[in-house]
Every structure is written in structure tokens, then in C-alpha cells.
Length: 587
Image (cartoon, rainbow, N blue to C red; front, side, top):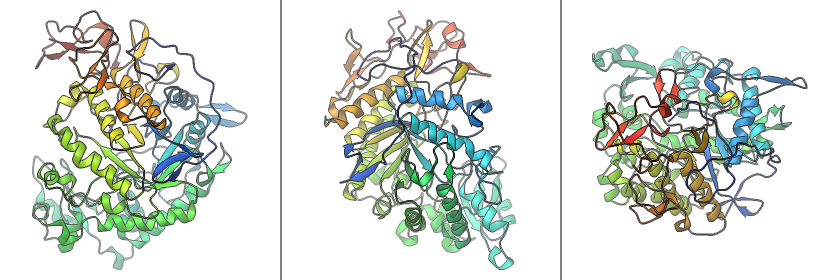
């Protein structure tokens, strides 16, 4: 999930308590001491040096790649060594905002579909590319110097940057002997990405083509989980990756306390109903499998076995770090019928991963969730269902197994989705804050967003997808918290309260638009919790949003300011960022 920005710049904040948006100083703190201690789990909770460890953080997946900063990575040479001042500035800003953990890709493979990072981290011959991995080394070192820890995933389920499909292609499809090449192909709809069926003959997929939805034959990526040749190659890579010395720290990754956790995958699962499709190659279909009982084909078994084997292997290489799965939180069944009556695909095994079973793996240290109600087509009216049947449920499963749990990804697209709920886009600071409250109440010790990406040197954009937001924006020549940035600030304050033993109910969240507030911008949200209303300090009296004018075409009371100066400063190329940058208007 991902990005945006404009001519903005992250500034520091002096406190983390509840407040409305006010101008802030841009003076940077001095870098903090390097991280010295590994995070540990004790009695099912994160600890550092015996103290509770709660955290707020952000994903910034491309920060360590040559693609970062719109491909304009600044390098400087000091004492014969390459440095990256933009990365230093990012870490300064994150640390100043109270962020304790960031998550970035530990993979970027040569020739990977959907991206082609140059230089990559991993060459096609499976060796490490030292020129490419240098920026990753520096990023991990810079994070540690600012008291920030890194979650490091090892591979992607999807094809971007370095997916499981890439590993199958490099280790099996291109190198297999004729006897080994009795491999299946997946017939994938390009629009929906559904695998319609498996086949031994790639040409069979062409018969499924439709003019409005072409079908592509691709090597079945799930061999990554099951084929011994692929698994051995990946283990060799993991060994090389974790044991080489980072020249910027003098430590191997496995010995670096600045790394929070080694994450086995980003979003381990299978293609929808894959475990059913493979029981009768060529005959079982997507629609047919959708009607089958997941117990008939042991949904979740393939991923479970791989996670079990690979977590044990990583522990044999790395005795220091926490290990986690990087999964989204899907289940293969649910004991509560009400949790199967709505959005059943989340809990019915379609995704081929069983959160409840994976939580019991002995070498998995903590559990993750990646939760996107808008992308998952969960309407705002079902959020309480989502809280009970997903967030609280996963928290209870983790606690039962003595494992901490984090919300490792969440967020809402400012562009929205065709045919999916739009309310989130219109009030995403409130819904982001609400997701945090659900996580806090369910006992989650960490919450991370996709993604709060700051600007760096020269007011340069750091990331640009529709999920990304600035922590601060410039209004009337003053830097104030963006509405989403204020939600992050409130969550940092909340996590500090939780670490001191206070209840989640002590936290102050973000009010939805239209909430009546007092002179301190405080009010009560629809769930009865204290909240603060974001504002752009405009005099319109429209709950912090300017009144719509002719040409703004308001819908359901809300519209866009088309050409006011406050909006034009947020133009990115040909795209104008219109939501959290203050470009909404109230009819």
C-alpha cells in the first residue's frame, strides 16, 4: 500500500501530548546513541533491558533502494566512504516524532517483475550485489544511530522487487533438468490476479482469455514453499545475507541490535484457493474451489510447513533476533458463526494461511497483521465487526500462544478504490486513529502505518503513492501537523501511556469531521472516546475546511478546491494531492 507528497518537509515536535495543530520549530535534535540492546519477548510481551517496549513506526519500503527519493539519491563521500545525507535526515525526523521502528524491504532482485532496482541487492546468479546492498547497510546503521530499530523482511509474496516467483524462475524454471520440469503453470487473470486453474501446458491458459480480462500463464510461485531446490537456494541466500559484515556498523546483520526482527516474508500466503487447485491440476477451477470445504484440502498447510522449516533455519543462523512471519492475519476457519457470515474470505482459508496455527510455531517470536478495511471492501458500518472478528480475535490468539502482536501495516488510500468503500478516503485521519484504538485495546504493542514518509534535503519528495502522507504540511508559511500526522502524534502519546501502565481508554484519538469541539479542539467521537479535531486554522468555520465555491462540485456535502493557492503548492508532476493537504472543502 503506498504513497504521495508535495513541497512539504517534516519538522520536529517538542511533545507528544494531545494538542491541535500548531507551528513547530524545524531545529533538529542531535543524533541519539546507537541502539545497544536487542528486543526480547518475556511473558508474551516485548521488552528492552527489562522494560516494556511499545512502539509507533512506519513502513518506508524503498528507503534503502536506488529508487528512493524519486530516484534522486544524494551521495557524499567522507573519509573514503559513501554516505547518504537524505537517509540521515529521514531518521532525524522519524526519531524526533517519537517513531521507534521502521520497516523496509531487505530484498531487491535483478530483473524482478514490476521493478528493476539498479543496482539490486541480489543478482540473478543469487549472489549479493555489494554496490546495491551498500545503501541498505547505511540505512540500518543510520536508523540505529537515531535509536530506531528496523524490521527486515526477506522476500515478497507478490512479484514486485523480489517475489517468490523470481526465486522459482531463477532456481527451478531456468535450471531444472527435463525430469524436474514437470511443473505447473498458473493461469492468472491480469485484472483480478485470480488463478483460474493450474496446468502443465502453458498454452492452455490462452483458452481462458477474455477481451476485457486477458489471462497470462506464469510459473507457479507456490513452488517457493515446497520445492527443495528453491528452499535450499533461499537458505543459502539467508545465510549470506545475515552473516556478512555491514561496513557501517562493523557488525553482521545477525549481530546488530538495531534490527528489531527478521521477517520471513512480506505477506506469506498462496494464490486464492491454490491448495484446492493443485489437488486436481487442470480440472479444479477457481469457482469450483470457492464452493469447497477448506478442510478437504488442508488450507494453510503449505505455508505453515514452510514457516516452520524456515523459522527454524533462521534461528539456527541468528540466535539474537526476534523472528516473525510477516503475514496479514488470515485464518482458515473461525469458531464464531457471525465472523463467517460477513467477509468470509478473511477467515475461510481462501488465502491459504492459518494465523491461528502459525501463532503456535516455536521459532516465531511474535505475530503480525496487515489490515486495510478499504482495500478489503469492509464498509465503515462494519468496522466494529472487523474489530471483533479480526483485530481482537488475532490479539487473543497471539496472547493465548504467549506471543506479542503488532499492526505492522494499516492505512487508507486517498484515491479510493473502484467499487469499494469511499468513506475512509474522506475522513482517513479519523479512521486511521480508530484502527489504532482498536489495536491498543486488543493488546497490540506496536502500530505501524503505510506510510508516513518525510521529505529530506532540499524539500525533496521521499515517496509518492496514494497511501503515503506527510506528518507536517506548510500552511501560511508555517509548519503544522497534517490531520494524519496528528493521528500519528496522538498514537505516540498513547503508546507512551501504555508503557507506563495506563489504560488504552486514557488515549486521545482523532475526531471525525463535523465533531463539536471546545476551545481546545477537544470533543467526543461517535464511540464515546475523547478526541481532538484536526484543523487547518482557516477562518471558514467549516470544521477546519474551507467553504466550497463555484466549480468545486461538492458531492454529499464535500468537494475539492480546484485552484486555490493552498492546493497548487502540493502538485506532484501532473497529479495534485487533494485530500490531507488541505484541499477538501465543505459545502
